Length: 242
Ligand SMILES: Nc1ncnc2c1ncn2[C@@H]1O[C@H](C[S@+](CC[C@H]([NH3+])C(=O)[O-])CC(=O)[O-])[C@@H](O)[C@H]1O
Ligand SMILES: O=C(O)C(=O)Cc1ccccc1
Image (cartoon, rainbow, N blue to C red; front, top):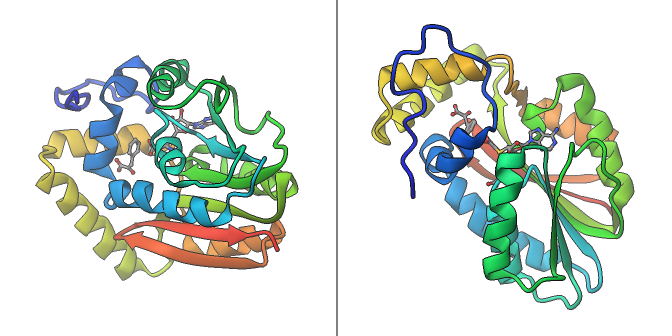
């Protein structure tokens, strides 16, 4: 695995974060050292998918990056005739994702598409995964995305939604942000790396509060929403279409 040193040297002017070739090259290391609980979430979302996957349906991995969520689900799901549809709008990611999935899954069991997740249509979905992807859409566009997912889900289907959280309470926000910084330091990131990446993400990753997430899921039609994981300021929810 290649080590992430993208923000190790001073960058006169830090440009907005993008999922380009350089990021794709180091992505597994970057996300593991940046998102507390990432590997646990990947493993456990496979267990959730196993419960909700229905025979002869599709499982969508939206903002799939290198396909980690799909690989976990493919190893867990037992239902017959399930197809994985992996979508990401970064060519750097989808090219690598295609190669990785080819090594692990039979052809015909998956499809990788380079597209904006807002532009695709979902069909016969029993499981939809948004693992740290919704946070990169413009806030005003997030509800419409969830409405589309709700429409595409079959009855009894599930959305697994993982997001970086913001907190309305200032002291909770300060504490969890601070512990997240400590987590990054503990994983070997320098103060320069941490601060340059923070600037790069400032206008790109805009977190919502847990309350906003639940309200929006309800507005989209989901009647049951459960938070099943939280690691500091990162959480994962599941929302069921009854
Ligand atoms: N509008 C969009 N359309 C399609 N893709 C998008 C869009 N916006 C962002 N992306 C893609 O969403 C992914 C977000 S990373 C997901 C990790 C993965 N789920 C994992 O479980 O390893 C999370 C992170 O890096 O914090 C990137 O690959 C973007 O190109
Ligand atoms: O690094 C951070 O602070 C994050 O919020 C997570 C992240 C992880 C990988 C790419 C972009 C953002």
